[in-house]
Length: 89
Image (tube, rainbow, N blue to C red; front, side, top):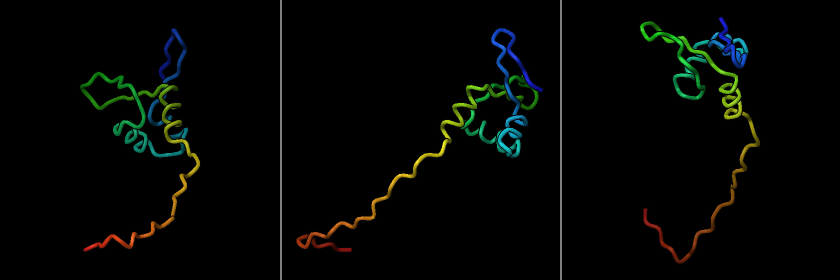
């Protein structure tokens, strides 16, 4: 079930729709929402389980935060020990 805002004609997606879009289980999408990684609006009345809807802007922000980038280079240069320092362990 897809909700549409009549004024701006924006399409909000449900967790199962987002799951199909990304090829993951809907419980994974719910975990992203609960952990705060994916923003969603609860359109439920509060007496039953939540009914989340996700905006296209929230999906874009989620994708931007999880976008793969170049891996940081890890320097493997060893420091030389100062011969004047005595280390006791």
